Length: 173
Image (cartoon, rainbow, N blue to C red; front, side, top):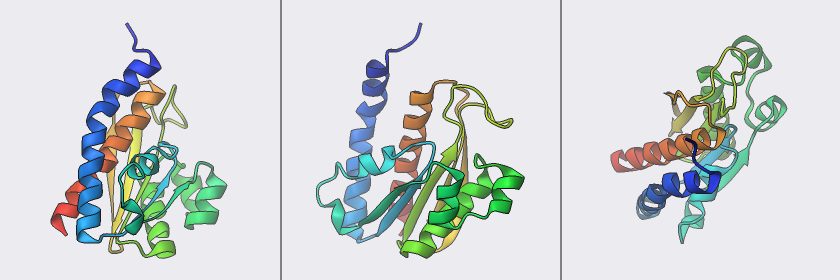
């Protein structure tokens, strides 16, 4: 039995509103600047972020870099990295976050890439996603494997993990 898109979205997003407000509060209270570059989430993280009143004091920009060309042009992802590892990889997530940091100087730069689904791409199953995070220029990557072949679910899941990771980082800064 499957969820309708609307039902799925309201079930998953019900907890996201609270998490987004907490993340936004932490960013604003601590004066932590943030930028994002999104591929598989397609702007959902930026969209969630701008629901927070006052977020403009810390949110620099959000880019949707869906194509390989956009990743290279906007974030400086190397063509050789895309060729060797594919756009759906930890290596590309790291280069996206690093490039965004170099472009914006935001204390937190977060990027998403991966396979939302349905179906696999170049050997990566739907639900295999990576989040690149640069904090003051130090880059790390978080790997997600949802095991689901549901595009909407995977996009929202990745966004929720991004919100959680940013909140965790804010608490430590």
